Length: 169
Image 1 (cartoon, rainbow, N blue to C red):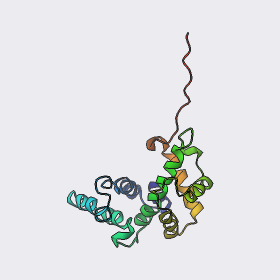
Image 2 (cartoon, one colour):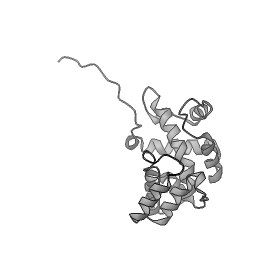
Image 3 (spheres, helix red, strand yellow):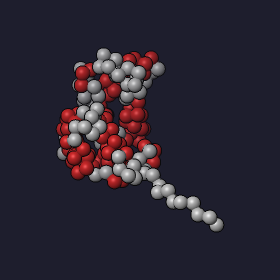
Image 4 (cartoon, rainbow, N blue to C red):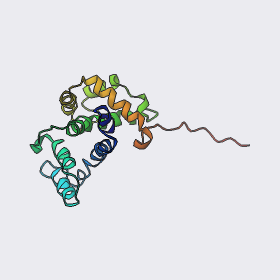
């Protein structure tokens, strides 16, 4: 989300808002996973805590069934990155190294065709999200992978170090 904010040329403070929105948008999902509840319960909680209206609206707009049309760059980026970041994460975690550095657009496109892989990821949302942003799907996938590589350690996707056997000195 922050990478797209920078690509859109928004100020650093606004880019941080993009990032926070991305982090918070599903905070209610585990407890309230149904379309009748998510993201509506979370948005109510956020409103009660004084979150900015543009953040609340972006979160509502990421669910097609909410009826809130995506209009702003933040809303479009959230929708476009939501399912894709999950698929990229899943693809990285099945690599022996568990590193996003080993993931590329071609491998993600293959995973998109494999309906059994990360089956809860909505492939149509990934395709439609890129279209809403007005970017080619492979370009969008590559952009998101590169953004995630830049913060791989924070995401837990920097990989695992090969364990070397202990040696006696």
